[in-house]
Image (cartoon, rainbow, N blue to C red; front, side):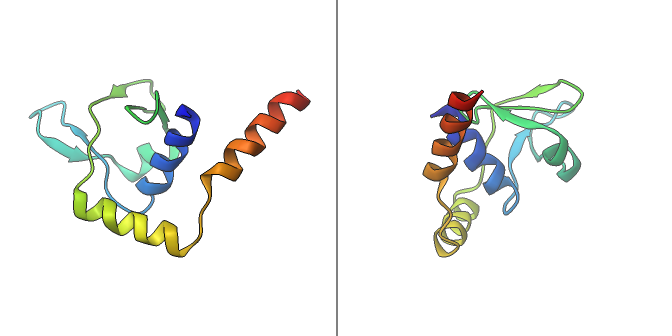
Length: 94
């Protein structure tokens, strides 16, 4: 289940800003696009780890942005269930 949430967060992050507290001010700041490309969501998308190993939390997204992302994913008929099935099958074959 955590892997699915990590994948959903990654998909959402390609469409809308994901925020984490700024190191300098503590105020929410959007994650940089380069960090999103190289980093990973972990622990059911509760944490984002940059390529350099920094862990950012808590992560937030604005409600209106999330609603837009949901609409886009629904209209694209994206299924994360199939992705999880493929992962389970790959583990069995390893």
